[in-house]
Image (cartoon, rainbow, N blue to C red; front, side):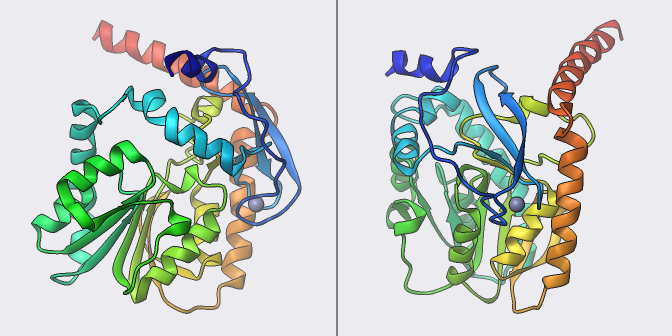
Length: 309
Ligand SMILES: [Zn+2]
C-alpha cells in the first residue's frame, strides 16, 4: 500500500484517477474557469471556479468508485499517517477541536438533546456531548476511524456512507465538521441533513474557508481529498438551496443553520453574485499561483522576524 501512496504524493505527476467532467456541484452551472492545474503538493490537479457562484471544484471529478477506493485504502494513511488505528496525536487534536465546538453549540441545546454527527471520525464530539447528558449519535464511512468510534460508543456509531444511513426519528442537531468539502454532491448531503433534523432544529456546518482574503494560500489550499472549496457566500447558498436558514455565523465558513421554512430567492442570488466576485478576486487571473508564493514567502519572512525578535 505504501508504494501505491507514492502515486498520491510524487510532485509533477497526475493523481491516479480518470474522473468525469461535471457541472458546478452547488448551483449546477456548467460554465467554469480553470484557476489552477497544480495543488499544494505541486501535483497535477485541475481546479475550476464556477462562473456563477464561485465554488472551487476539481474537474474532472473522481468517480464514486475511484473515491471509494481512495477512502478505503489510502486517505487515512495519506493524511494522518495511520495504518491500522488512529494516531494518538491526531486523537488529541480532535478532542481539542470537539471541546472548542461544544462551547458555542451546547448553549443552543436543550438538556438531553438528540444529536447526529455526520462523518463522526473517531467520535470525540459524541464523547463530549454524552458527557453533558445529550443523546449523541454519529456515522462514519471510513472503517478504521469508524471502528475506533464504535469501540467507544457501540451502537451509537454506524459505519456507513451517508447515502445508505437511515434513522427512525429526527435530531435536534446535526453537525458536520470538515466533511462537506470531500463530497461531490454537497446540496444532496445537506438535504439529507435537513430530513434528519426536526423542524426548528439546527444544522452546523464547518468547512475550510477558501475565501479568506488575509493570508490566502492560493493553490496551497488545493488537494485531492477536497473535491470542492467553499467561501462564506457559496456555503450560505448551498444551505439555502437545501432548505436551511442561517442562524449564527460562527466563522465565515462555520455556520449554524436552522431547519425552518423561508423564501430566500433574493438572498440566493445575492450570495451567488458575492461568492463569484470573491472567488474571482482571490483565484482568477493567475492569483491562485501568486497568492501561493506570497503566502510561502510570508511564512519564511514571518519566521525570520520571529527569530530576530
Ligand atoms: Zn456554482
